[in-house]
Image (tube, rainbow, N blue to C red; front, side):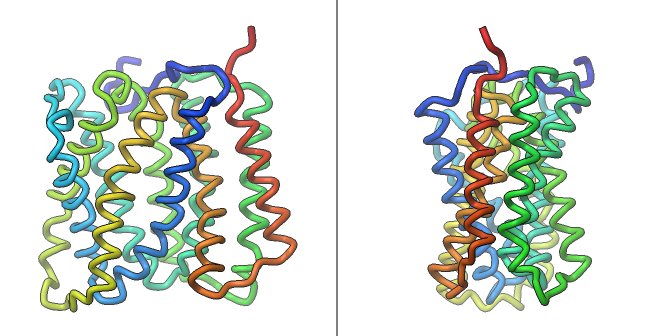
Length: 301
């Protein structure tokens, strides 16, 4: 498409997911599935603005140490890259940090299940028509599965409306990025795209980071969580995800959104003494089946 702000393309690999694709999904599932807990730990002693700003600084700074990340971006590609920096980096980093002051991390993780559906809708709107009926079934089934996992966590509680709205805004931004990053990742690779977007996002969030700098207590537990959040979740994992999107396209790469709540559930049991019932187990089975359907080839021969 001619619109350089909103354009996407199919992935270069339209076959079934192989070991490489599954390894990329597994890595990001673990890292991103744990990121909601890392955010919660970070804001125990640090302000949301500082957490959002510092995680992008850590991401951009760490990746910039690699020469390949400093690859020059052509002028025409800075427009979509700027959109990615705003709606996929600065916005979500700030929104999740503020939202998790009132919204439990498990619910935040559950809400990310909307990413694959929104990614597919946006891809279709931008002209991608390569998804088949089984992919749609997988997307819908995954959404239902994650809903089943999340129902017990919502029983008896009502998340703060503002927090939920902020998370949904972040989720929408991720869905946009899942599509925009495909042609950029195919052209430059995920490393420079992630580094430049994170660095630009950090620049935008500078006022939020320095506004209440004295309010930060810098406790070791929160600082370590923030470092992991910045280097792994916001840095390495986003490089992996950008490369995956370039390989398989935005909609199929977004299946990660169905695996994150599964990891969040496991983390909750291991570290927060949460219990798992039959409803969650049934939802997990449906999520895994749906992930398999979405991973299948986009074309048959």
